[in-house]
Image (cartoon, rainbow, N blue to C red):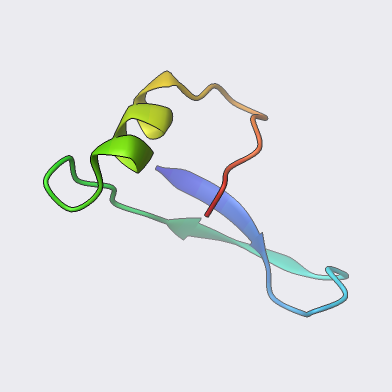
Length: 44
């Protein structure tokens, strides 16, 4: 999953990161990742 995250604490700059969410590590987060759409907020 590609996400845009803030790189500074004041959120003035950001960067794209690729996050891999496996079902075995975190089933709840995996379910949210599967159901997310472009522009959704991500609880990561």
